[in-house]
Image 1 (cartoon, rainbow, N blue to C red):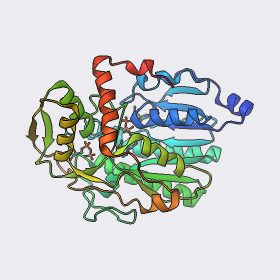
Image 2 (image 1 turned 90 degrees about the vertical axis):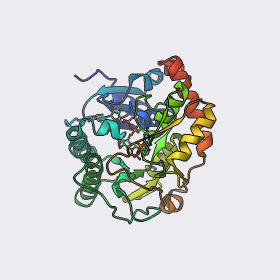
Image 3 (image 1 turned 45 degrees about the vertical axis):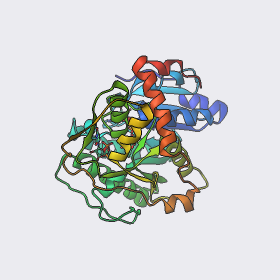
Image 4 (image 1 turned 60 degrees about the vertical axis):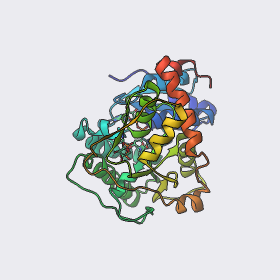
Length: 337
Ligand code: NAD
Ligand code: UDP
């Protein structure tokens, strides 16, 4: 059932604010984006089915008159008076997107289709949160946007990888056929405060395990690599990509190009938390990509964007967040904005 919300058009008419719809706004990245756009004076409507998103990610935003949220599954169409759309709605952790793979595929495909149709109806610019998973288990390093990838269409990661690829195709076709102003960010592993303790992704898993003194679960031998971007850097990239001064209607990599092995990450987390935890090695999941690093030349040249927060600094802030979460799970309630 949809939640009541304040009239967006009323505010935008009174103050000539941009009304921005953020699908997936109650999630990790979405809640940071809501906050960022509210601070910059936008009217923000968060649309979320709360499948992996959480109310505590939003509670500190309820004091903004310009903020509202609607409980809605984007697999079903919706009409709202909006000027811009960000589509972040989709579980991002392998644990969560594999829990209901058909729903993941429906969210990527039907959800994107519904939001693109909404964009056509209101002549709205629309942003798609795409992913480095577009490249699958890549054979080219680092990965430039022109690389087509190495993706398995028939495995446990396929619902997400192929769903996101199909979404990019829909965005391309709505741009060429209907002239929709599309923006596509291919996001590489991003971490930070407001990840769920049970998110299942590597950074949150390692930090929570270290803080609880539990074994750190490295999958495989830990030699596989990822490039970890801190959330604030990424959100800056989103807003630059969506700005009026940019006209990039093609996918753009956003991520931190500094590459770490999973074992190095485990060692950094143990050192930072001064944890007594020991590393234990577990089986490597099927189709786990061996190596991943973004080529961010396009973002640098076209957006003047590159990450500024090193892993050690970002981990420190993330550890502090999880420390608060583990002591007091609703600590976002007292966050001051
Ligand atoms: P998240 O799971 O915290 O957030 C996803 C949000 O979407 C949640 O609030 C969830 O409740 C909502 N949602 C899921 N399905 C929905 C549906 N059918 N209808 C409405 N809402 C729905 O994940 P995140 O890390 O914040 O990722 C946000 C977006 O960025 C996702 O689209 C993800 O694919 C993309 N992305 C994230 C990363 C990353 O490293 N964080 C990397 C690549 C891509
Ligand atoms: N990983 C790990 N231990 C964990 C969770 C993940 O070793 O507890 C590994 C996983 O196998 C992958 C990497 O960390 O090689 C990143 O996993 P994550 O789920 O964060 O994202 P992915 O990039 O695989 O989508």
